[in-house]
Length: 492
Image 1 (cartoon, rainbow, N blue to C red):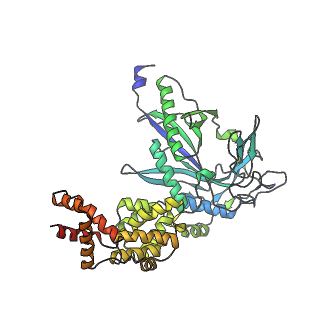
Image 2 (image 1 turned 120 degrees about the vertical axis):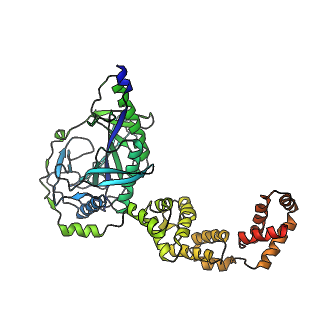
Image 3 (image 1 turned 180 degrees about the vertical axis):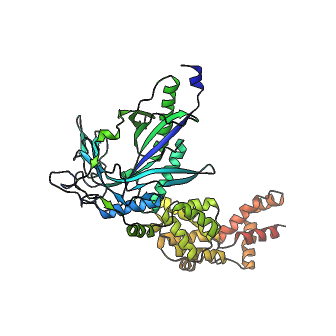
């Protein structure tokens, strides 16, 4: 090993292949349901089992969802596309071939943009194509879809329920230069697909899976290095860790004067390392040829325009609009647009006459806390946009205090009642009469001679304790500002 080899600075080059399960009720080429968690091999038929004499029929809804995804990514949709057979043998592939797309995918191009350390990062999309999923092998010691532990003596079990489920494969260009960029790309991509409502992207159910192609090269070198594919990446966190580990492994080999071998490796999350799986296949290994049982698909301009009109505003554009239209800080806009449901809730709240910043604060604060505690989405939180807007108006009008508003919010979530009704039932109308506030303050001073002496002795923090006493006595109905001013006047 030369000294020069150890002085070389290497950079990581990554391309990601993301497989996304589309939100259809039935499979890609047959009428079997796509429900997750059914008993093994219960959602199968002669078509998805590949029995002799059967013919596949393309699911039009699946192709329509694929078009939505491509348009959401800004891809170019081909007016003519076809399906191909990808031939290989594996126990979870009953036909011994997978119906996929090879040389004429239905879309190419597009990009995914996200912010990273104050700069805009754009990752190009190479292609998006449609294909059917394979089955699932269950090895000894793993859990089946029902949660039972698989016990197999010296073998594995196969569940073919997933066979034939419609998958979208989104292949990026090798534009990613770090594990952090990979994580940002996947997060932004998932958000776009969920906004477009083409997939739930639930990684725990296998609705979103990722393979990574990673290589290293000397910084500034235009040519790509030998790539290694990494499989078994079932979380964005594992993707980032696997990329860092694999890049370090490859750099170590090159600095020792070795050579990178093109292969497929598995990520071992327990040992924090990648390990060999098999040699990397090339396209010719799969002996692609056009699928003879499916006709090509022609995408007319009218069809494409009809799909385009159904697309919602994408998250990045919505964030920018929240800042420009509602005057929200960038941070607020980022949080509120994390999911389409949350962004819709915010806009519905503002449409019901809530001030944007107040609505943002309540949604990011109390509503998010409630959703996390209940492990639900905003639609099932018990809080409606109209109810929250009314609560905000009550606070801004001085009808109730901010402290009382939190009690009202909790009551809304528990009972579903409107805020005005809860205020009346619980007697939470704000105490605004100056005389009544002074009575409460004098009672607090009489009951707490120690903090009174501390305050008069120069310990100004004692005032907050006294304010708290008054607020507690008034059940949060007295305004903190009025209480503080009254106490200062009485103490001086």
